[in-house]
Picture 1 (cartoon, helix red, strand yellow):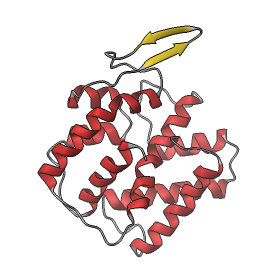
Picture 2 (cartoon, rainbow, N blue to C red):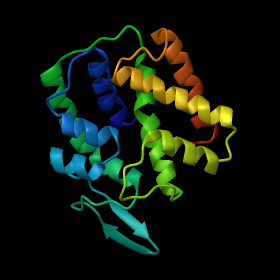
Picture 3 (cartoon, helix red, strand yellow):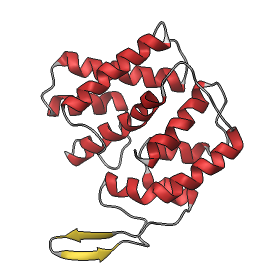
Length: 196
């Protein structure tokens, strides 16, 4: 399991509980949208030891907060994620949720990250502009030659995550929303649109 699944899953539970996220809001927004550069700057945690190989050249990336791909940014964020989680847990405390299983929260965390990561890898996004997730899903779905029903299933899964973040009754129940989300997530699995 990736560190981000546990940490951001916890923050999604905080949101769903109705607690307003004010402390560490900028850090939370940066990491859940995959903005690792801002997250590293805000949290200022240590960077892990890392070497990179590129075209026969090996470089030491241990003190370099920059990254060439989303996955590198995610790996460099792991020590900062641990600090962020400790700080958030101290502030918001234990949050129990009987509606949504922990495993679904972990998938919900990687949902947007995986979609944006794969869209970036296929050069479908303008790196200088933040593109709405609805559009990113549509672009990636077309690029992967998905059936329109599969794209719609992923869009419904996105709406379930929005229901967690901004409870607006997008589904009649958490159970129905969870089933709908898992159906959409299975499409990502089918096309190997995953973080790892």
